[in-house]
Image (tube, rainbow, N blue to C red; front, side):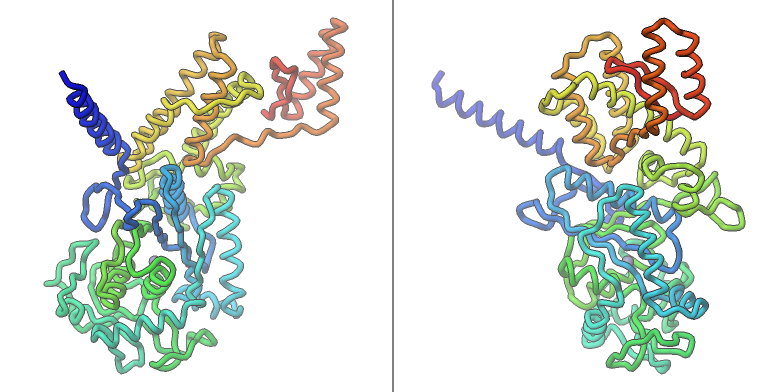
Length: 491
Ligand SMILES: [Zn+2]
């Protein structure tokens, strides 16, 4: 048989393997636009850069735990894309002019930016407490008024927007559809129930009705000082147009990913598509991802039921941002998740298991460095590639913890092996973002007691040694005897 034959055969096998490997490595996501799980292929022909827009907070109050589920989900998407080698441009807008904000400004008599600034600062503190990566761009709606006006002018020129007698400018769904566009791309709408000609000035109109929505709201006395000049007179932008203007200005007319909570599908995201595609004639977003609702203690969150939690409420109960992040990351993003205080206790236990294992590995590895072991990362990647199957990913993590603990307990683990396992953990933790708990430092007077106990033990004064142990325990600390000597651990 000729050499050439074997070369061809080898090339064929090699190409086939590359194909299979490439397929196995492909990320698949549920796209609300197609209502199906699709392979994720960036618009960038090189497959490297990704534009990602996530609807940010409306800064009129502290964000609640339901909001945080969406932001932690967006952080998971971004971190996983970065883990896979993509260069992500993450944009999250700050809605700093909107109906509820105007109401807050009116009631508190504070200037607009003073009112929104306090909630914006709190939002970013909370985002940090949950260890979410900070978005690269955080555009404010009030800084994009010229772009918003330009976009509305385009819609007027294309005949899909009109100024009504009340001075406000509306988007005409009828004209948009007559121009060959589809309204109802994310959500199937029943146009028989459509009430043509009805106009909605409110940002959050009844979700069952389909009506023309406001792009520019004419100034009313209730708006007070909050107003900008425009070709249609004094007024302010509608909520939906803000997102279209900011996302396209930063990421371009077409970009890869748009995320948000499922409550934003209609009308907010549907309207974003209509405004953007109505103005540019180009496809707006390739993949729409939506995070599901969150229940608290089995019920829809409500202040009257006492199950309405901001992040601050939960921190005040003694839970950490890390525990809350972990719990929010345990459920698949498309499943309704029941968030409970018991669940947070469970998160504490689960994290302690991971910390203990990682701590032991660190001790075993000493200063040894090694390349990451591939087994954990492979199982983790296979799970997340499958529409971010986080349950399977955690399954892989805890299977790994069990395996490591077995090996450590048997005294069968070499330093290089432990270092390799640690490197693998650090690699996947770049996605999970739960890190290692910061070890609580015991105060110096307690550290001194440890030394005294050590001396007592050396002198075989076990009564004194036990008394010191009890004293530390009464102060909330427990002594752990490790290979490197006694350490204090918070109870
Ligand atoms: Zn938005």
